[in-house]
Length: 110
Image 1: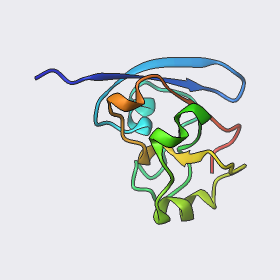
Image 2: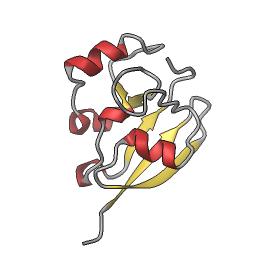
Image 3: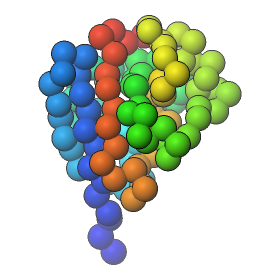
Image 4: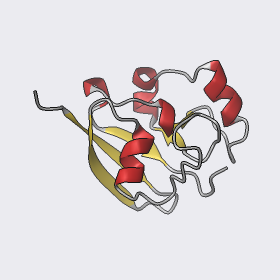
């Protein structure tokens, strides 16, 4: 059975866009790393043990993506320029509902 592809747009802090199709089930961070999107450092490899895959979820997707769990919320305290729509991209798993997801990258990670 073929995996469903989910389109994600990553927007760098300077406005440069990267539109990438990622496999259903991967995280937003995994897709970024596999496709060399600049600005997603992912120092801990997706273990929710750092804040170097911090993204801002486009408000139109906030409800679909949901709120961070307690562990992610604690890690986000280490993110530079945390906002209401801040999430760790290692904690956002792609599925068909997130088709067209847009995330913006902060100027600095960590």
